[in-house]
Length: 582
Image (cartoon, rainbow, N blue to C red; front, side):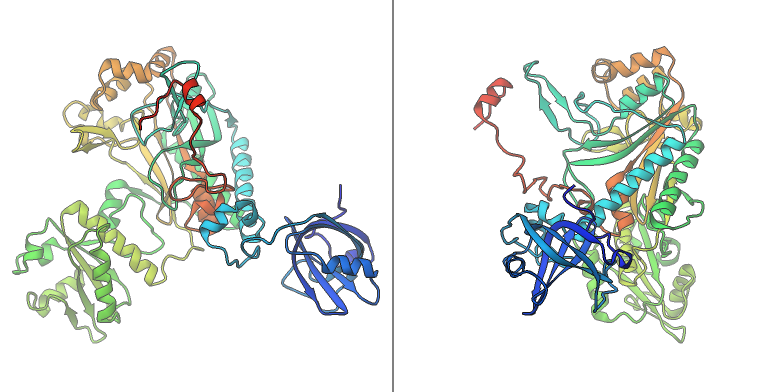
């Protein structure tokens, strides 16, 4: 090794030792007779000291010639610092350097490689290898490493076996768009990159591997957001001979274990909420339950009073923002503009303040008497100082808009603390959802999800009412994992494909291998997959999963560091039998 210690290792107990350190020059401070260099590596920073009255002139001159990010080797003796720095672990000591060697010079970096940098997102992604030298980014990847290690520890302890499944697979029509890979050896045919290892993990259950897991790369060619990347990592799991209750118990245990080991947080049992209640009370199948502010439906309270907006609405529904009656007219106008944004889609906002004396003032006073408004307050269980916010319109659209308003109010009132964690299970999802464009049902999760046994009789004549034997884990309004009990009976799986609009030939062309496998003794089975990148960002307190991926793509799906995707040569295209259109 070129070093005896790392730059985060030395302490007061090392005083007097001769050491060799290597790393990058973070900064240099020259006070004439004294010169100090902060030397950085992955483990921390150690201060190097040069004294004009002690150091050799050539060593001092060499030190003064160094630039930021030079890679150097320093040999010297550990001494106690006169001016200690209690903000860094090595702050009690410094190394008085007797010999210095430049291992590599460096150009001036395009941004400051410090905790607080002057580099914007685009610039730092272009020079990601430099950004990774910064402590906050390094700590994110260290958190990811710890979480991956603890996931494996927990699953290994519960007798799961890690099995790698193929990356080059068959394209399927359900779900998001596939990334496809042309086959040179099979002209005109294509592999797809897996959106998940779903069918393979089910085949492993048929094979008798009753507890499988994999920390696996998955790929989806879809529009990107802060919590999406074209390639992402899943904790993918499947179990045989289990019920939904077994799976919830096992993976609630995993999440509680991670919180305890990684965050030092003891988490109690996770609450459960049906999909129907989540939509009714929060307008979302991934509710943020760090704060209350549940929806209150007002149709029975507000209709028939001559206010056309309410009278003609399918749903009138609102939230009680406790303690927010002091909002100014300007703030309320801003909230109105917020809900009228195209991506939210409400046509307006009605509000009512509950004053400290108990009186109520609303934006629709000419339609509602003081007695009517008292009934509003009663419906909301409102107290003096509360602000009631009401939307009206089509049922689904209005709930969706009110969900966005609720989250915004939670943010404005400081109720969405990133250091508070409120996980829950959402259960009893609809099995199918109707698509108006294609005029057919689509699987809400995927076509292998089993119906609730008590709803099987609805499959022929009322498929839209069937509940899925499915479950999602939600933390702080983010879906971090989801799964289901699978169909393991060939006839039921064929019936499901038929309900989803597959012809018999189409079903066999896409999934014949799975249907055939079910004829050889498929056990009852189910599983779950967690978005590992999302879990890391939640544990780290960030809204973007990019912060926890070593080399992420930007919002356009591009890697600006290596400039990918990029064109390939005509010779490669010819080998792949691909002709480009111009």
